[in-house]
Amino acid sequence: MTTALKSVRALAPLLDRVLVQRIKAESRTAGGIFLPESSVKELNEAKVLAVGPGGFDREGKRMEMGVKEGDKVLIPQYGGSPVKVGEEEYHLFRDSEILAKINE
Image (cartoon, rainbow, N blue to C red; front, side, top):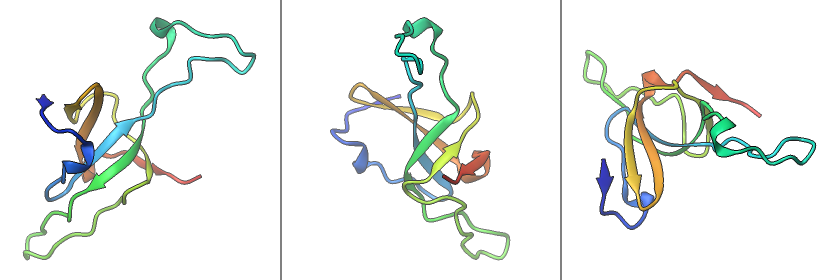
């Protein structure tokens, strides 16, 4: 899905959605050797850019989100809704689809 937005900051996730951007894998080894793009795998790590207000439980109360803006998370290799803004690609996931929060 390509959007006509000028900035990703204009996207506000709804309910329990989380907007993330995958972290690009290093294309250089520890020894300083540059790797071709075809040999660099996509990481399952992402940075949370925006978080919705949260979904509702059966009683109609808002549920708290498990992540917040700026968190580093582990996401599934496949899934989510891709959103392209300019040349950058972002993904929208449900809060429950995020596998883990990375604490550094």
